[in-house]
Length: 173
Image (spheres, rainbow, N blue to C red):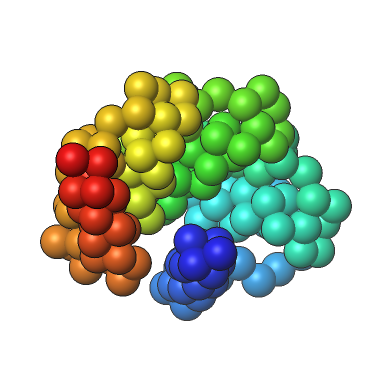
């Protein structure tokens, strides 16, 4: 539940930053938004991805969300933070199977790219995959590595994951 809350908060902050700091903003007609997205505006692409992901103002459609977030990733001119966010969201979609076939290997790849770009929520998700053995061999040391890295980078829930896993490892002997 905490991860979902953090995810929603991070998306809200992300969208606020996009709307505040883009030269054109996201305002305008839907046609204008689609036009800008199709012309390669990574902010518009990311915003469309968010709209389809959340179902705000459009019918929720995870396939379309994946499409637009994929466009952000393929956009060579996109800001690194927007690309990191897009990779994280795609990782979540692949892990859940929403918008297509569930694919933990692809989810892990997306999370690792986002983590490399500094997205600490991705560190947490990588740790979860390893801790639970989802799509990868269960590996507490890998989980611990990713969660400690997230903690070092200031992720608010990472220290709790680290403590919990260390207790679990210690109890197992």
